[in-house]
Image 1 (cartoon, rainbow, N blue to C red):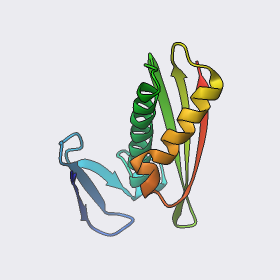
Image 2 (image 1 turned 90 degrees about the vertical axis):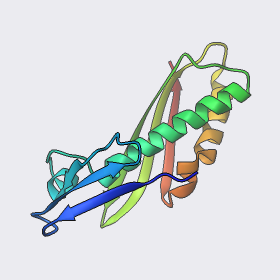
Image 3 (image 1 turned 135 degrees about the vertical axis):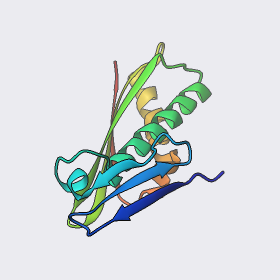
Length: 136
């Protein structure tokens, strides 16, 4: 399987702007700029998209791992914070809260740690990855 996206940029780095379009068209000429990346401008940015990718991938991986262990979650909510510092993306912090009938915390922690390690996005990211996992 392959997925794709296209970035278009016009102008200088600080004053210019660009747009992003994804294969699915969920992003369709979505604005991004210096201000949306480093200040409070309107639009998206690479770090926000990385956070969405990691939160989504981990949550799916956790769901499948729970299913494999005989559990079906009622709901899993995952936040992800990507840190950009010194010109490098250095950290991805996952924080998840899950409502799962019939599971104890020890088993949940074991499955969550495995999902963090096995998630394809975790495998792709060459940075520190942390996880805080809680049962609701």
